[in-house]
Structures are given as structure tokens and as C-alpha cells.
Length: 102
Picture 1: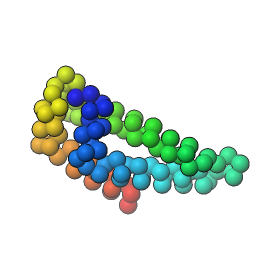
Picture 2: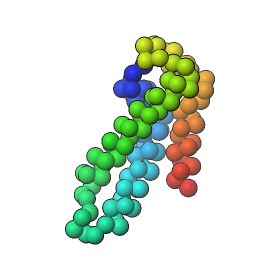
Picture 3: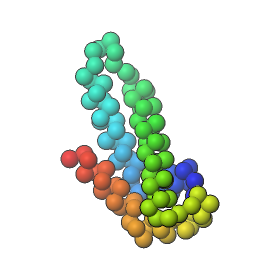
Picture 4: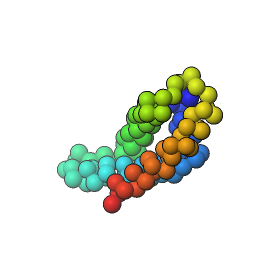
């Protein structure tokens, strides 16, 4: 499974993207609000930055899953999905993001 396939799998099987984007956009908005008015970014720039952060998050998660569960990029999506489900990766990641909001 490559990074894009993992992104699709995550978005189809969890609420990780929504939780991450909500957390990231709130964080970026807080930083942005602390800037001088002339230096503040508009909502489109904040969304772009959040999208980039999500992409980097998925790449990092892909590498962590691959190393932690001893998977390879060339392994089938089914093998990845089974390993991810057995290790409860999506539940743990989603819980971790939600805990960071508190």
C-alpha cells in the first residue's frame, strides 16, 4: 500500500481526517490571530497549510505503520488493512488526535 492508498483507506474507515483538520485549523487560526493584522493570512492560506500538514501526517503515519507492523509498500492493500485493523491503528490515532484537543 502506498501513501495515497493509505490516505484513501483512512478517509473511508475513520474520522481521522476530520479530527486532524479541525485540530490543525484551530491551531493555525490561533497563531494567525496572534499576528499583526497586516501579516495575517486569509482562510484559503490557512486551509492550504492545514492540507499540507495533513499530507505530511499521512506520510509519517505510513512510515510508522510500515516499520511498526513490518509491512512493505509492495504488500497488498488487504494485508495492510488486516494488520491495521488487528493493531487497532486507526482507533488509536483518532483517539490520540482527540486527546490532543483537550
